[in-house]
Image 1: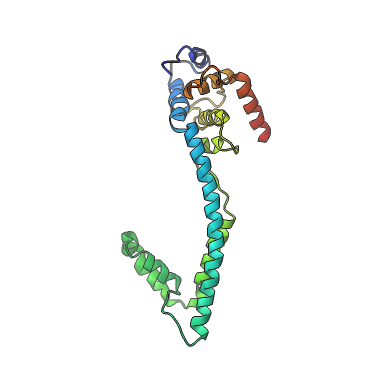
Image 2 (image 1 turned 60 degrees about the vertical axis):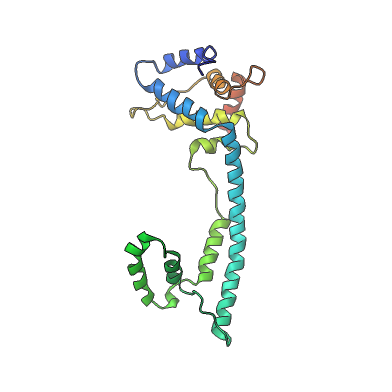
Length: 229
């Protein structure tokens, strides 16, 4: 931003007109909307986030498939144990599973173990079977709706392919996140012009004059997103 300061002059002028330089609003904008976005919501992160989202979908699908298989095997094992001449001394009570899984969990050992074990007085008819629990896990994974808990990452992954538009949306979302007027944030009415958003994207992404974006590019993104909502 320092080396390309001349390009940012019009942005600073717009900030002075809309926010002024007497308070902290312009500092909030530069620090939390501009610098933070440029440092942490890069095109590389956008690509990585998209890959993580696709992988999470596949992992949930695999869990759903494997849960069905495991549940069937657990049911089959119960039938053999209960009806055949052979049985295996395997886990069958949910509390036993939790207790075995928490052997190295000091918090469990200190605070939950005694209370949970007292519930073992209830017969198995009061508890779900292991296969039923596994099926619930599988059904939950199958219907999972993958969403981002980070608004800027969500904004950058709206489309299937990464582009400069992702970064434009991240800047916009950064502004929206910090619009809490009266609480040390940006005014609810604050809106940066298409030209200033384009300039910030060009500078923060270090785009050349040939590959840089203009106000029309940003305007098209904003109009497209507005129609989508």
